[in-house]
Length: 93
Image (cartoon, rainbow, N blue to C red; front, side, top):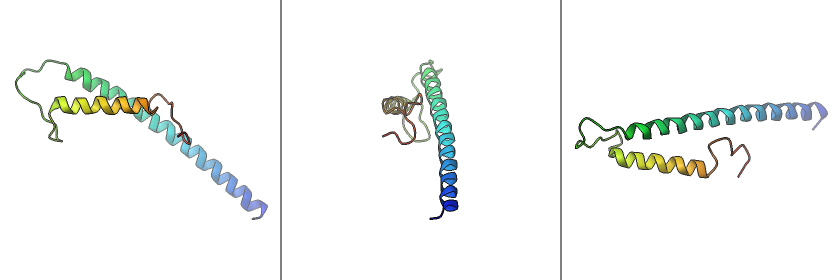
């Protein structure tokens, strides 16, 4: 490899790194947004409904309580694995 090819490769790698850093920031912002949305959904689920005997079912076919349990579990697992609050970045295990 000659010098110009090495320089071009270094520039390309630097650009790729910048793009990956921007992507990581966007993913972290999305994770934070999702965490806030989960909080709103959970808060909303605590509101007493007009028809307390009616079982609300989501498009997935799951009852509301089961869906909320899954959302809480996924949120907790994501937090434990460091995907929220910017604890996990590119290249981290």
